[in-house]
Image (cartoon, rainbow over the protein chains, first blue to last red):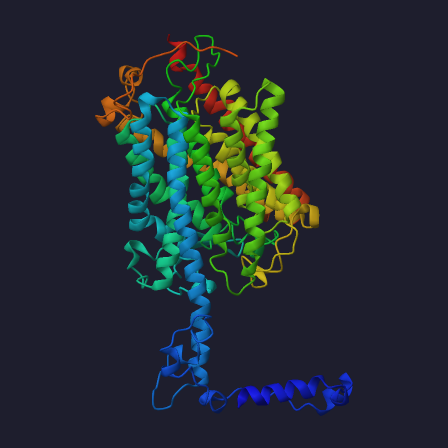
Length: 545
Length: 44
């Protein structure tokens, strides 16, 4: 019957004789009536006998009968319908964020095989074990205290149902402004009312991000890092160093409030973590690489660098693909939702991510081809990663042309940075982690302040400042200043903090294995088992093509 | 706390760029050379 009435109404409205001018229609149309419980009282789902026949086209599945009714005597009410709509929105956002988090978790496998492939076979077990155990060590540290420091005072996540219990930020006041320093709710995911479904989703997503930062460090110190020191260093990074900067940028800390406090754009903006994840990891990698020193044979007595070739380029490039796949969780997932608050921009974010990775790979490949005569495979892979790292911060704020430019610059920058770190600074970084994640993490942060086009709209504001994030090229120089303050904080604070922590670990445990262990390969002395026990590991003469 | 010194975006930009340069110089120009001085390959 309702279908019949609807059909008659539509037919009447579309018939020319019934058409009205807009003004006349406006004058005669009664004000819209609110939907009442009576309107939905008689809305029924399909009858059980019909459902028993199956639902091959899906038209009978998911109807009013699936809405939870709070009082069976009253039947379906408007309140029930509205509650279901709200829960559907949060459920969509939970599902989106969790699946994105699962993708990011799988990036650990990508990092593991990239790093192992770039190291020598005699250290394969050790390198894989570091990448394997950093997942657990980081998670433990983050669950104990890191999450509370980072997100304990974020003050709510609208997409995930509010999570109001994350509301305790330790702050101080200066110039009449409040500066957030660290959060205080969420230790063990029970303290401070944080035994909450929304908090769990936030934790999972933030935890896998933190673990990404930790696994960056294992690359720069590979092939000479003592395993015990690695465990302690990773714990400290996951418990304190990463969460502190994470709080300042994402947890309601002082960097995020540069906009509300000082009118600098929308405050420090780092959509998915070029700074929070990659620059923190890259700068910690630099601090550690300085402390452990170069591998034996990396430099001759005159300081001239020697190339130490990794043992499996197939692993390296396969790992890069896994990482590129995981990045679709990293960047689009950082909306923390797919429904509401402008989150449909996830399509644009995903495309920006893949484009920047592509131009990054091209940038590095052509740079190496022109400079050295060959399209270097490992640097092409690093170029892809560099493009992905650089687009991580701006992915939610820029258009696709800007994404391509950001990625291309990143691909060239990673090559220049590798040469600079290797030849000028004389820092040995076996996998290029400092350049891929450190240099390009900083570039990504800066690029937000340049390329953000002011078209994004995540609920009408960002970091509490109304409007869209807009960079220098689109008219807001203040945003670039906010980004540069973030860069200064990363270089001036995070590096120093990480350096001092690792220096202390060096003094107590010692960071570097003995020369004998290093020459033998770390697999047997440190892990007790070779990565490739059936292989004969020996030096072979290199033939230059 | 340079932000409290001036409200001019250009001045703030100059101050923060100076801060970035000082930090980078500290790493590249001071810490790294200090480690290179006693690097393992110098002892070989």
